[in-house]
Image 1 (tube, one colour):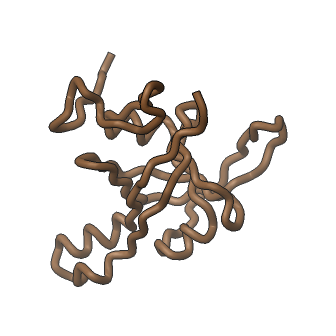
Image 2: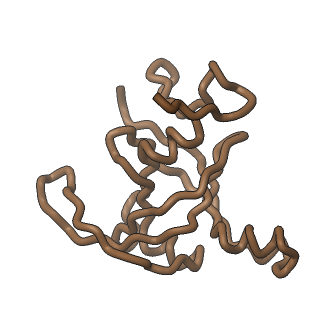
Length: 139
């Protein structure tokens, strides 16, 4: 199977909360559509510094991370990233990669949204067993 990409909408979930409470007009919600590499081998959502800046996400911590080439790096973590795909959404923390590094949609947001990689179609799909809403497996 080759690389899989998906069109994902990312939003600042604090802005969404403020909109729902009536203190922020909808056009002021910081959001962007991103073509993301879907990587079930990655655990978290990983965005880059440019995305973090455009969404106005605050760094809350750092975490040592093991890269694919075997080296360790200390990466910032942000919270309150809303991820939307088709009829699914979740709010997660994200690692922040330097500069304009390619962002990754990892296993945690994929599980929470109940989406799968279809090897045959080489694309991200909504779980066909639960097409109308996500179902969380608690086993």
